[in-house]
Length: 369
Image 1 (cartoon, helix red, strand yellow):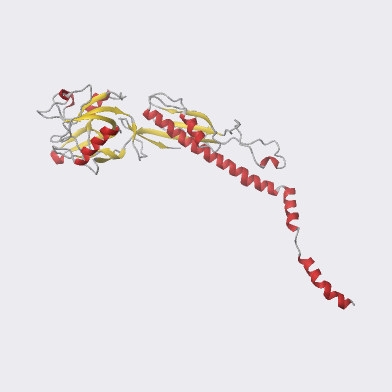
Image 2 (cartoon, rainbow, N blue to C red):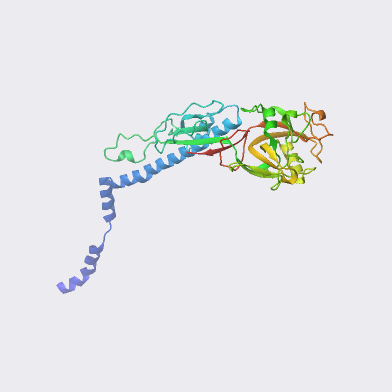
């Protein structure tokens, strides 16, 4: 009988020996009981939330510092309030705190910054004295107004019931100053003397409509030699009436392009600038040498200029804005070329090099910490 029953039950006994159903539930229960899964959840979710918050605050600080720097460059004063706007726009919940906006601006619109703590969430030590910069400090603020980023799982861990959350911090610095590089400067140059006369020198007075002689004129005796002999104030055109300028090199020399008539690309460029009101980036020179096609200009900076008219720019027809008249740029004699407009402040696009020389109104901004 035993021999008959054993073959019938042997498969069942073998299955029971191999069956591990229910073991996973036991394992999960053990892990929950010891807090391992909660610890893993706290590590992945809560720490991930901290990293996400840090990234949002840093992006907000970056955008805010650039916005404030731009207001310092192009406005009458620095607008610190724009930092909060951009910080909130970079927060997923639309809320963040800007705890401090400080720095140095030649206009005196920013409070000084405290010493750096040297931590990763703080900006570095202040740059060299006289450098224009702004630091924007951001911190956690929830949509409910709390300054703590609440945890999802960390509070459930043993001994962590009182943990309310963490305040995450970030800081960004933007520098600005004279633009020293540009591939989009117009292939025309103006003298430092003419710029000083039009703006009052340093610090410059921007916004007044002025007449500028591109080359010598009897009515401007204090600016003799505004252009090299035989010149009409034009630089070598690198394409589209533009000149590539790099003032970081020592002894900057830009070649000249003599001629009685303006090239077709420069005619088109002046007509376009006049119609759009877009600032022109004009190189400023202090000395000249040579004559004709061998003449050169020593460039010292870039000015931003809004063109409102021109005269004796053959073959272009004169456009002379009020309150000026033809007598302000007469024909005959040396037949001076003139442009009319106002010097302004503007950002040179696509450049990250901030200079330390004379500021002529063309500026650049870059993040620096």
